[in-house]
Amino acid sequence: MNHVGRRSVLAGVLSLLLVLAIGVLAIGAAIAAGFVGQAVKTLGDVHVTRDGSDLSVGPGTALQLGDLIKTGPGARLRLRFVDGSILTLGENTSLSIDIFAVDGTNNSRTVVLTLLAGIVNTAAAKSGENQFDYQIKTPNAYSAVRGTKWIVNAPKGSTGVYVLSGAVELGSNSGQKALVNAGSWGSVDASGKLSPIAPTTPEMLQPLIDATSDNGGGGTPPSTTTPQPAPIQTPSLPAAPQNPTYQRALKNNGQDSGGRDYSKGHTSN
Image 1 (cartoon, rainbow, N blue to C red):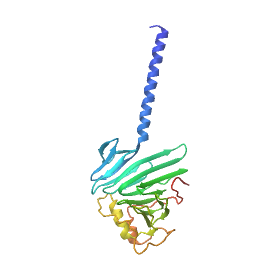
Image 2 (image 1 turned 180 degrees about the vertical axis):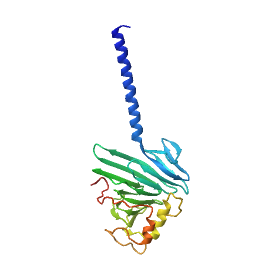
Image 3 (image 1 turned 135 degrees about the vertical axis):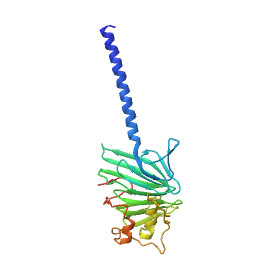
């Protein structure tokens, strides 16, 4: 083989290696883009539906964009997202990971989860981005937060939002919305009607915390029916009550200062 032939072969080999390298990088990027978190702790029967397949979930199982997570009777799942946010799913809960996008170029983060049924206890990691949109949706409502701990309960077509720290914007699909501060709760009924915001009580909150405890605690979440007599209008509530019973109810949930500026879409610092 002459000198020109050897150069041609070498050029061909280098081109092939370059194509292979680009392919490997593309596959790696696709895997990295799809990975959004992992299961930290599981109790009972937990599965994920992915690309038409039903997979068992255990500690360390990777979670991907588009996953539909389901817990069975008596089951619990604690998961951690790559941004540091932590969710605990109670029994008989279905949650889909619809959007999980972190854009370093535009300094933004967008997370959209849908709670189809059941109950979830969420601690959204504090944001340093210019634009931050963290939402948990249900079939009839949404809750948009930043640096906050809150519980979303979605029984029989209604939605209840209970705020442990920070604040949450609760909105219905009909366009009604309200700010729910720490120590208070609100609900959207099956018809899309938003209830007045009212204070939580230890008796109301403890079953919710038990229902999302991954230590095997039981508990039936309270109804999202508007309390009787007529709920107290509380457009701006103080921080969570500092009585010992209430603090015991929050003992295992920590505190997170969080932001106070919310909108249905992006929230700015």
